[in-house]
Image (cartoon, rainbow, N blue to C red; front, side, top):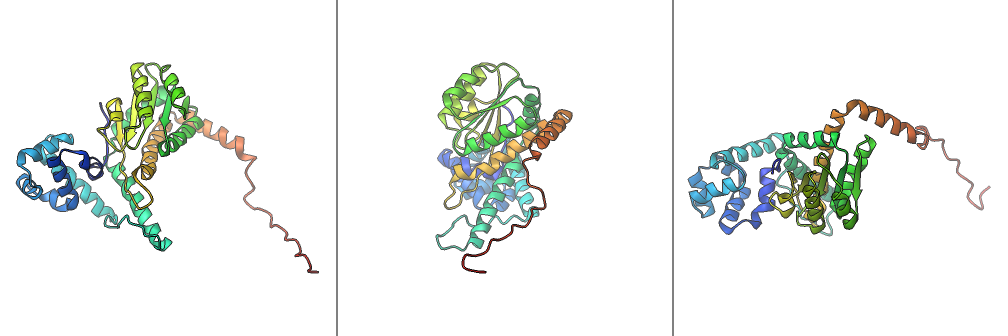
Length: 305
């Protein structure tokens, strides 16, 4: 499996609670104070988390790093990027029923910004290039997602259709499975699921893989069942707030990944894309109101002269 991505701190927030107890404590320790952890020795981190240096090394390798030194560099890079960008990472995600909308706007904006930045920080552009190149040449592209993930899949299908990519978005699991069975080597199947545990999406991607298609997973959990059946995995970051649970908060991060893939496909098919966009704009142009809308003449109020 290649192309697994995701901001490190975002991954720890999502995957940490599901790790074995000792590894989960290390994740909690790092998340509690990333700046200090970025400068801590392996002994310091082991003592602060109540574990051992061997466990810290295992934790590092579980995340895909060669050792603790590489993990520490990744933490320092991510915390340094956040400091440079001055994101307000300390804003709470709590929203009370009587909070003014100006405060709610700040909470929602900060949460979405952190989620998008976390996704972008860990996005593997080499994997994006691989997927974009495959889509640009594919005879068929299938997208599948349910619920909020289905909204992202539907938007991606709409964009690819506009640039003459043979793409289908399936909302019915049986239709998705039967069409996945018709895919061939060189085709592409993209499955979206925040949890990575949506049975229908997993089955569809597995069916596509059985027939030789390039399979792509977009999920918040890089070690989920969906990720296990995919050739390329893009891990999204999420930031929950009151009234917006993780599955509802993943949409913006999913759209970021898909939008980058779309633009990369458009780059590779520049002439075809430019022509297609011009034709589609022209086709609907007559249905747009003119920029200067005539002022509506107000009728007289009954009883007035």
